[in-house]
Length: 421
Image (cartoon, rainbow, N blue to C red; front, side, top):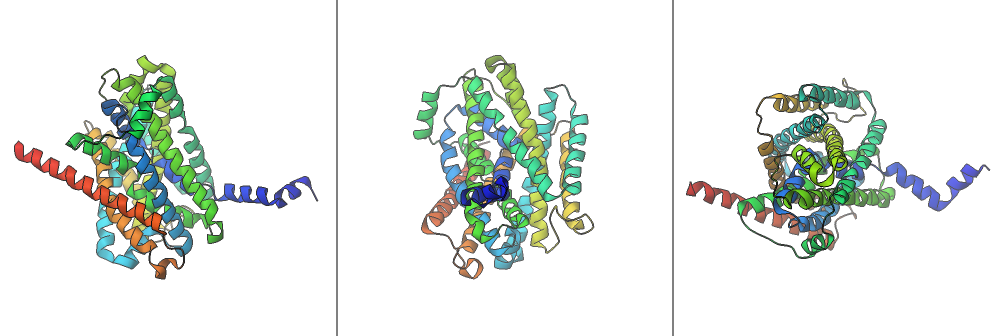
């Protein structure tokens, strides 16, 4: 017996190799969450409010882990996508409502990703009229000319690159005691700006599109229920990476921009503003992270939307399929990409309004998706013995109720402000 064969027969080694084989959907879904819209939201939160909103990442992390685990479990047990299950369980009307909201939000999200591509490469002297079309073509070729395994390896590499934000934050020399106090002593205010930012952070950390992509990715990976524990660890690692990157983006901007009273409108501004306070290297790393996140998410977001729509209406879907095998899937992917690119190339497009309100729309749509998910994952006809436990239900329902409450307060504030004008 060779040394390699002997090592593979070791139970611990076998378990580790199996974990590596299953690794992917959770980490990729979590990492894409830190997209250009997310980076902009976290950057603005740090620049405007300093460390005061760091506490929001704690409940967001807990909700994210519970929700993503539900998706993985539903995908493994049923072998069906989330949109497919929603249509079967709640009918076409609910599916159509989610469809309209998700497509609208994801066109805005994808436009934001190409804004991130444009902004990050402008820092290095590349015009958006060159960078955006080139990246769009590269994304199209990646999706249409590569199989799922190849694409997944590229996505995992992108995920690793996002850790560059940790270095940017450390170079900014933040006050760690102040950060600790901000995390353990949360502040809550009810003005429109603060509520919008809280909703924006939650909406970008636990985005509706993630649930559809996660479940579809688990199915495409063909993970079995006996390998569930490895899928769970994949989810936990992905969610941890999401929140760690978000944390350090907010810390970097709080330690530099907020301390010096600088206002920013987009993530590109944050990268440029970091330079005099944390050095050129920190600014370049921030811009590099923005570029990687933008390309990464410009690929995944249209895919998530295409998965949802095709599953909802019974069309073939999946990047393992050829264009002629899934024409509706690739047509919708191309449509979202094209509209998003045209928005970014249009002069004077209101990118910041698109970015922030897209995240708020995510938070408003999320309770509908979560309610559907929680009801389905507790249905023994669908899940058998693999239904939620009490803790999972408590976190899921609490998160849903809080989001509904915050959304209602935000809308009321907006209405009162409009009446005063």
